[in-house]
Image 1: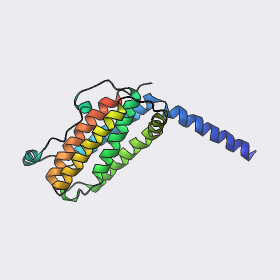
Image 2: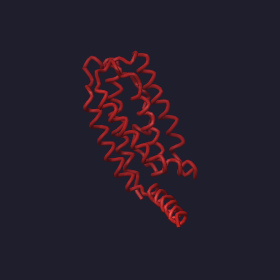
Image 3: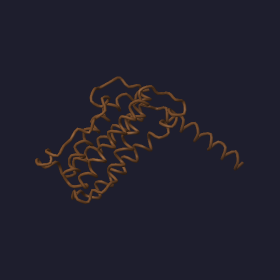
Image 4: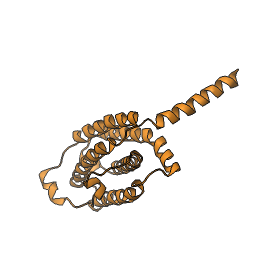
Length: 186
C-alpha cells in the first residue's frame, strides 16, 4: 500500500513538474511580477549623483539588448536566465561603500533567485533538447557585457559612483527583461 501511494506521488510530481515547466503563460506572469519587484527594490537604493555621470562608460551593451528583436520563447528563457545569473553575481560583490541597505539588496537577491528557480527547469529542458536558435549567440555577448560591468566596478574599487552607474545599468537591464518576458507565451 505504501509503495503504491509513493509511486502515485512520484508520478504526480513528475507530470506536474513537466506540465509546469511547459506553461509559458504562468512563467510570463511570474517573471512580470518579479521584474516589477526587482525594479522597485533597485529604485529604493540611492540614485546616481550628478557628478557620477561623468564616470560612465560604454559597457558594450549587446546589440540584442539595444534593438528589439523577435525572440523565440526558448531563446528568451535562455537569455533571461543568463541575465538573472549575471545580475545576481554582480550584486553579490562589495557594495559597502554605497550606503545601500543590506536588507534591500538581500530582498533583491532573494527575488532574483526565485526568478532563476522558476526558470531553471525549463532552461535545462531547452538545453537538453537543444531547442534554441539565438540564445547560443546572445549568451556570450551578455557574458562579455557583464564582465565589463564587473571590471568597471573593480577598476573603480567598488566606489559609490561606480555602483550608482551599475545600478542605472541594472535598471536598463530590467527594462529589457520586461520586453523579453513578453516572448514567453504558450
